[in-house]
Image (cartoon, rainbow, N blue to C red):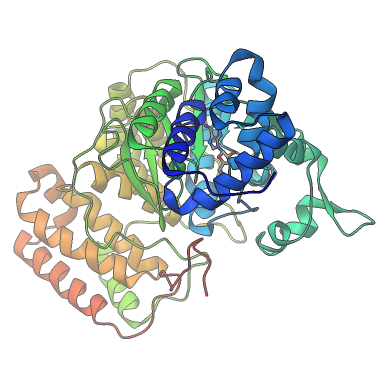
Amino acid sequence: MTTHALSDPEYVVVTESLVRMAGLVFDVSRRGAISAILHERMSKSGHTSTGSYLAHVESAQGAEERQRLLDAVTIQETHFFRNLPQIDALRRDVLPDLLRRSRRTGRQLTIWSAGCSTGEEPYTLAMLLVQLFEETGPFPVRIIGTDVSAAALDVARAGVYSGRTIQLAEPGAVERWFDARSDGSYSVAQPVRDLVEFRLQNLVTDEPPFDTGEVDLVVCRNVTIYFGRETTARLVRGFHRLLTVGGYLLLGHAETLWQISGDFSLLPVGEAFVYRKDVVPQNGRRLSVGLPAAPPPAAPQPRRVMRDVLRVPSLRPRRVPTPTPTPAPPARPVAPPVASPLQDLTKARDALNAGSYAEAASLAERATAAHPLLVEGYIIEGRALSNQGDDDGAIAALRKAVFLDPTAAHAHFLLATTLARVGDPGGAALSFASAAETLPQASSETLSELLDGRAVSDLVDLCRQLAVSLQSDPEPVVGASAASHDDGRRR
Ligand SMILES: C[S@@+](CC[C@H](N)C(=O)[O-])C[C@H]1O[C@@H](n2cnc3c(N)ncnc32)[C@H](O)[C@@H]1O
């Protein structure tokens, strides 16, 4: 059969059928490719008219041919460690947070890679987790990869890769996570495979393989770009139902829930964004322009202005001397079970005042896990972690506080000093400016903790000066975002 482009009416009928079968929307730019696929499938299945072919694939008897058509029209583009800012957000914040919570509740962690294509995405998630387990010890986890393409899932289950997808993995990943084969391809290592399962599932027409509230993280990247708005909105409502409170949704870097769903809170995590299911959605809250940059991978030497900040004695968060050489922050004691978030918060406050920082951090974390909108919980956690020398943990907690309450002067101030200390002058400048703006309205309790006998106007002036001097510091910021291409790889 010679391939000719589908006529206008034929193309309309075909694309409407693809929307019904899998939510896939194809515009005219894909007419050539879709025509070629359709003619090939019609020829192989013995159909001579588009109408009879579509009637067949949409019928119950046409399930096998429908699968072949969907295998052919779907786009399986993917690779290992895709989009490094998102991988960093998963590695540094999202997965450790979920793991901490699961350990506390004793509940298995459930992760769904929805639209997983040939398996690179769920295997990457498993690699991040196996790496995390090296620090924390193992924990029951299941990662379910689903896709509508049976052909893609065959590749995923085989777990053998070569070429571009391997070349694009992060440095060192190949040696670490794959076994080299004699034909030059690479097989995913068994401990990684053990965490991952694959299932055929159509996100648009099939029931998801989970119960309500069962999923901790949904990763659905570069899938809704093929769907219409209504389909995406319906899918996202389903994700929301399946996610546990505090669970995360990660979309592709170019996908957004803007004007699709108001059910999630949008959180900046380093250079990426993640959505989170909260008790009450925080949508509509203003995100500050110029979000703080991700903390640099290793704290550089404090520079001139940093040292000035650190020299102001009352600005420097108290630190418990950290025994050397201890690479990881001290393990937090497990807080005793069963207490309301507010009781935990009170105890966390007391522990902080008593200098029991590990206990304060653990209690505050438990309070916010149970009640994710407890701003004071994040502030206490931030202060406690900062006092323990865990700057990254403190920054993560304090960012949550200022996201939830942009008027939280104490959090802005602590975030500013911590960012200054870890060598992020741009982020510190923004936070000092926010502290200067919000301090005059701060509660007397906050002020008494921060002022140390000085007038509020002095502290406001100091914050303003620091904001200006940090902002105008000509040295480049280590770890700040550089020009990046589509997948966030640094050039
Ligand atoms: C571009 S790939 C994305 C793979 C991976 N998530 C990533 O970002 O690297 C899109 C995947 O979505 C799958 N897909 C498209 N429509 C789907 C549907 N209705 N149900 C399930 N998967 C679908 C395709 O088969 C394809 O494997």
